[in-house]
Image 1 (tube, rainbow, N blue to C red):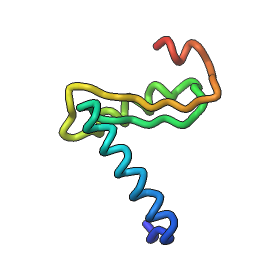
Image 2: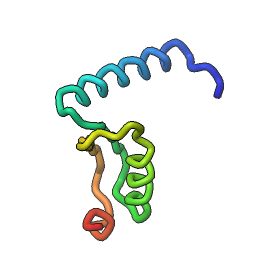
Image 3: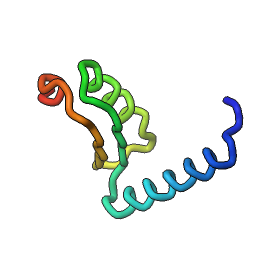
Length: 75
């Protein structure tokens, strides 16, 4: 992977620090989803959660979505 530009590096570092603070406050892994809810999103979420190593007993989800397909949400 190419190195990040200084502003990208700073942004990523700030996001990591804030997510770490949320993980500590909730005693949970944090998954952030910024996307419309479309078919197939449930598989991406499942795969992302399975990547948490070691996995905590709880997962907090930060969801920013304009909406989407209700059938995907209900799964």
